[in-house]
Length: 356
Image 1 (spheres, rainbow, N blue to C red):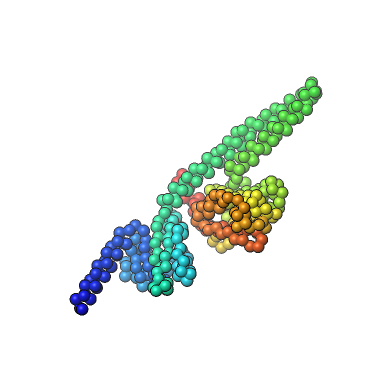
Image 2 (cartoon, rainbow, N blue to C red):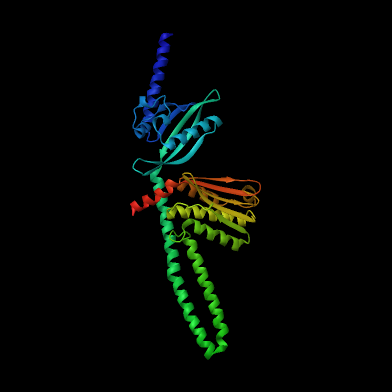
């Protein structure tokens, strides 16, 4: 009996060592906590990240070890996962290093169960900074190309058409004296050219909607509301609570604008909204953008048409900003709320300036 017990204990110890060696060899951060968020298992990747020894981490909470506000948020989310029993997967979060650089991590919380009762969590964290940097660079290349095209349209084709319009005005004056029978034709050509100039300006503004030197994002959203009102014959308004909003990096501002643009288009075209309210304001350390309408609601609107990529693209843009986006359905209508940390919106500007 004693021999069998010793063999069982030896086998368990062998399995423990094997499991410990396995998780220590993985590049991802892996740890397990009990219901009080105390660490019970930890791998080398997390110890290296914290700069601590194993005995300094075991039986302590991460918030005891690090005062980073992100740790507190993750522990709060872990407590929610244990309470609900629902796994949390593919959550991305930004961490600001001591040197000011931004690192991105994807984390997962999976409940541990003991006879059906949640007894703790297994948590995995994978750094995705390189992937995020590549995605950001791809988007920035696209944004730069769009801005270049917008500038070419405005400063190139737009200016040439304006020059033609001025020449045509001079010709119209001359023909009105020498050949008045052609005046009506010149007037038609002038009207067509004026329409072409307006279309060129609209295209240029659409390719580069946010101009930091002319009001930035608030001014761009104000123009979006006015254009939505004219185009769809409804009431679309923009407000920011008379706040003095901080300056944003152009790429981040463009993401926010595109989210508002997609939301207002959906509300006008598919939700049959009569009023749309765009609101932009800072709340503490975060920037919040909300778009609310009085239409038939998001679920009803999606049920009447084939779901497109618009919602997924909005979610993707929110993730690129390090924020979250929620789709709410008050009765009536839809409210889309994006919340993103301001320090990341500013940090992206510093990072881009260092990269140039």
